[in-house]
Image (cartoon, rainbow, N blue to C red; front, side, top):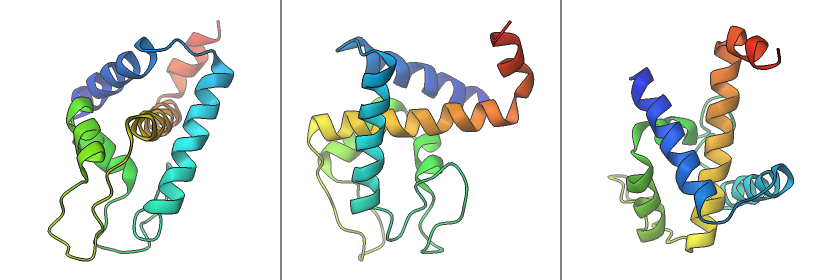
Length: 127
């Protein structure tokens, strides 16, 4: 599963940053917009941070949803309205620029989470 997450992270980065090159400030702004979208539309039930439980026990944290899907599959799900077996979950069809922002935020979370569990990688990258 770890290789799938790392592969997904790499593919997501390529998808996100190949269309329109962004500097670090642009990426941070895009990710902040993604976080705001998740806060407004998903946080009532799903955890949207790198840690913590979801407010609704049956709702997986968004970081787990991100790790579960192939990047293009998640992109399609967010664009077309994710289908869930929970009737209470609204089917939100996000605009493509909103999907980009959400994926940028979830990518940022996955990188942050990976670095927190691999401190040696962080130390070697600063040398």
